[in-house]
Image 1 (cartoon, rainbow, N blue to C red):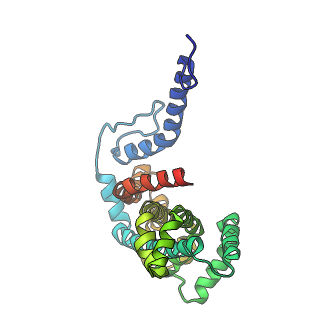
Image 2: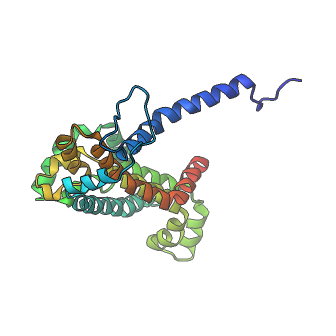
Image 3: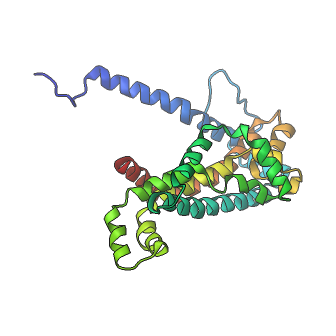
Length: 280
């Protein structure tokens, strides 16, 4: 009996599982190794020929050592301030810009869209000097606002929100326009309720980008009291080069907020991705 187009043979099924196992090994494996290392006691050898994921002497002392070595709570607070400013800028700015590009007709709209697309071609390192000069001239060097400012409105986020607004049937806009609704009322009552999924995608991307950024805060910040968590963790690498357990614990501390944010918004995140895949 011949197989249909959608049937999967035994060899193909084995190949799929092998590929999935390989992808899982190279993506999740390093994270599990760091997590296990952060719980290993000082008497354990973490460089054994046969890797051991389960700690033989599990301890939370490495996490306590991170708190003693650096003001980790102050650094977390600074990172949260930067993340909040970045999320607010992207949620408000990218949403308004996306609505304007998708739903409003104005002179130069296509030129603005072309300029936004052009910025995506340039790597971030090309404009980092001009960004620093701009932030310094504004008097925002060595401040958390200066760290958040370049990422306050991501051009990719603007395009994502524009695509989400374009997916809304234009008949809804026209009906609201006939009923006398102005642009702001159409944005609030028709646009926003329809793009909540994509907005959650933008929020997650903005948070991860701001929280994980290392190069830009390292350039802008000079006062250790203003360091974000990623910059402050470099002290662990210099002070505990012989103790990778503490470095692994610091890495896990930086990772936990991302898990919390993603777990909180994952329902809206997958809905937004699904809407974009179907409507796009």
